[in-house]
Image (cartoon, rainbow, N blue to C red):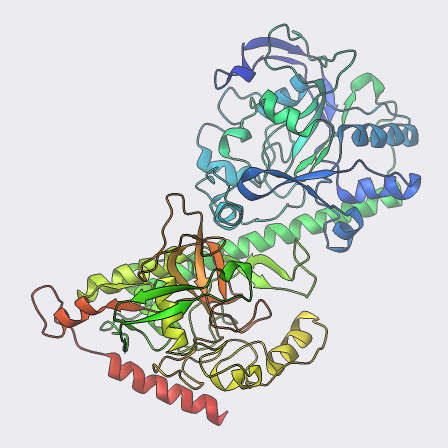
Length: 632
């Protein structure tokens, strides 16, 4: 506990009606916990009493709608989240814990009042935040909804709120106390989890107490919480922030996935002074383990920061070379039936007419993307989605957001592997640069163009037919070799696979048979970004081969499967991802060039740059790389 001195402050703000009128409040000295109550502490209570926490726990899902979420505290314990704040508790659950703890310690613990909470969060400051007014500094003081988190979760769940323009290097809940404290010595009063208070909710401060006593009603049905979380915007991180009546009514006494609590204690009720009392061995072990966990997180963040700086330095030292002009294949105009009856997302099957275009026979490689990064100083964030253990990750679905980027060695084994851990925005940045350098109009394929090129005139499940055992001749999919690697590295269960393509993770591009159009890796290796917005199905889709763009495009479409365990291999397969989402699960891209652009540039007209054609040189180097792989 931290002793907070008595004082006086102006409570509230003019930011919203819920925070008015601003009023002077006198606060008596009291004690407040340094940290939120952790999972480990609350689990001790559950095991001692067999207490059953309130259900349901609500989670913010698609477009901000609240859905029920099954939270298992035991699972958090086994997932090394013992020192994360306990969440998914109702207000009554906090009271049960407090009653038990008070009985065990002979101290009358309680929740802080709303006034005490704001006084503690301000820590003597009258600024927007306890450290000042610059919201870009929020990431230094707490686990907030930052740029990376908004790119991953915001895009995936189509949340409208914008992430703060900073990086806190923590996409998930963080261990308590890993960010600097405020001037009162209190940690995580910014971000991570909001915290229940003792008061009953009132829509504004009309009639509020002028002291720090809790403002309660005889029949209170609307307890509430104060503070921002790791998934709420910069505005909610202000000490003065209060939720609206609508927000409070939506959650009532239910648990919430990013809501926790911390303990308060009146000075007179601190019967035993912890400063003079000898802590038990259990308490010593808890303190030591928490310190160890905090230090590990701080070290990880320091390494991530250094890696970003080193990466930028590496970019700047790369040698500038002539632009690698991508080899291209002519795709004739034609008509085909797009979609399938395999999945609802691929229905209805519909006829599409496609104009002639050019497409790169290979996925964009590390070598090509390196040249762009070296020439422009382009950097990406150091986080991307990654395969973990089969039932691991925050959603127990085998994937999680972890440190890494497109140059991380396990994602970039050679210059001629496909680039991944790149977002839709990253792909378009590369294509804009390549177009500017060459005078040609390079772009992502439309979803229709991609499927048309992948089918190569076929109407079967695959371009070569329907036999899935032949897939391994045409692409690097999730096969026997891939499964062996996932069993070895990610604790996957063994099972039978259709065939063996000889490669564990991603492969050098162009190693397998091309389709009838001469295009490689339209099956497996990496899934590929296309120009379209994501749609639930093909109802209303264009029939002229153009990109299907919506007014509000939160998610972008992907085509094709990957080297990994997600999805199948058929041509009509559809996927999606957030526009800023990066993934080593297998998201790359290939290049399309309009025929008009290509024809006009073959004559080196004034609209085109007079550059050396390096595509033959690139293909020669690629052939040597492929030869080495085959020999190996």
